[in-house]
View (cartoon, rainbow, N blue to C red):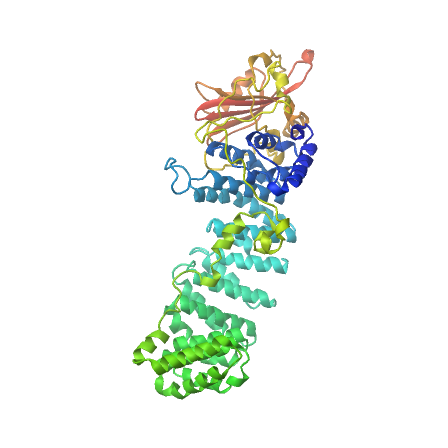
Length: 625
């Protein structure tokens, strides 16, 4: 019963307490009446209260598509707020509703119904502008968190943020962790149109004094080539840049990272071998990091057929085998020598025997030892050398997909989307990885069954215990008043146009729950002529009247509609009803009107928000006396 309390702070605390008491069952119980009652009053809550209500929306399963779209339209003004928490909570609510009402394979719904993926893309398109705005205006801590959410949304719907790539350029005053996040995101935004700009920007960051920044910049460039997102010629261009980095002897970590990137690129695009091969013997002399050295040795084995000095370069490494501490370098050396043996047998024969002897006696790495034994037995027992050659020199190492198996995190990304707007996004792991099982809050969607069939028309839920609009209906209870059917909401989530520049205050002025008003509430008026009210006064007067005292007249059918705003303003002016602002949208006309009673009748103002829908023509009014 306290959820119906007129004081929104009481309702907020009630939600928190119920969630705590019923945590074992997934939180407070929800049904259609409770959910829509809270949403209809959301404009009354404080910022903290709004977040409490928004956190409930992902748990609610809409009765049908129309109700889901109605809730999304109801929450759309929240995206225009400056509160990042409310915006992100609304995004999670939108994605949850899209997942609930979108068409899935096997559904018997109309073929024109939007799919889950279509709705999610529409949601991400809608929330792109608010997120980009918050990124540019928040603190460093807030920006970092928002970048994590943006990264997750880019993985969900690739391509939507591509045109905003300049927002993710690194700024001099950005904190280190923000710079790293931006550089990683830039690689995901590359397409044939913007890839040259992005690669050029990443190239400027390679020599950054921050070692990790340089490494991430190289990895991001390689990622663009790996995923073929840069368009024609991008792979070879990036490969040439990476080859140039092999000679950056004064920046060893960049040379090493470039070698590692080239090794992956050769597996993905074998056609760039001719671009990569020339500097490899020289690079092996200077690269000191184990990962980079192992990558160059691997490339010498892959490209050894076209590199004249390849056997002699590897021979020097084999002679110093005992001084090599890293198992990855030894493994790469073994594999490259065996492969090179089939390309250049006379030159590599003695080298191969030496490295096989060393590796089979090496007990520092079980993997290395087993590989050496495998190669030895394969070469010794194979009846036909060509069989062994086909096994060793086959292109099985060539990458045929856009992801290496160890980099495929599609399951994790899908799981994280279910925990959007939690620490899981920041840590990039599931809740069970950093929260004890007994402390994990259950996420239960309700209700399992709705009283409404999917095809039923949706009508707004009203609550006479809280909403005082019944006073304007001559004592008729809202439950007894005839309800008007709500026109189906389009699947696209569209933003309202702020005609008066009120911003968030305007969304607070609108009353989302229309309640029918009978003729008994209408009275004769005598209005003053020549009344002038500026925008600031209009806003102040509107805000001073509680929403509960507003008179709402929903969806009055009209035989014909206006062709322009002038066709409405001029006739009303003759009756001393003046226009504060008006505008024509694609689906409706909007008017903000006012009038003032004669002094003999009290001299009070009447403020009116009128919406004339175009298809079909109908009139909705919100009046504040």
